[in-house]
Length: 195
Image (cartoon, rainbow, N blue to C red; front, top):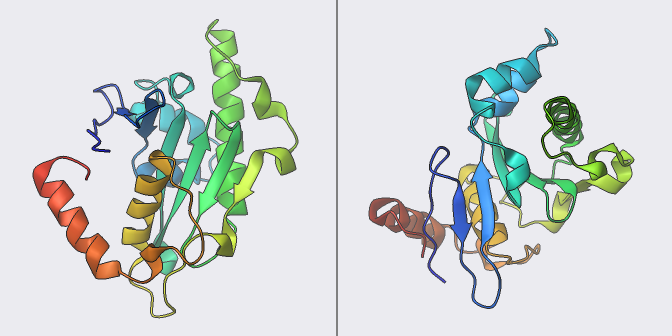
């Protein structure tokens, strides 16, 4: 299926898959976790000030969040999966992402409380025990070779596959054909359409 992506402010994106309703998906910028990680206790307020107020994530099925690990020069992907009622983490080097999932849970709990205060939609599932909310793909997602350098492509393709309902598995073609996916991404970026 061909997908037409829209950015924040344009209503997110609807992913059309034959035989199913459109998946309502949106994303946060790479600055989302940078702001949340600040140790001054104002991460949530900072995220909301920097654009979080414009997007009511509770109206979407999925929220994709790329994470830049500056100290490691590495990228991974966090997902707020509202349909599955869980927080997910995908990393091409097998990291479990518990730190990021905990930050994401705190954000969701604050967002839920904020919505309740304003009389908006809230989610019961964000108060479940962590072990019921967290999903870390670990080594079950496609992994890059030990030489590294492909993590950004992996993050883009994780989001691409998962947004279309295509499951990830360790021996996926993604692990064997990085040049194909790089070229495909160039075509998609230049044409403005996901193939």
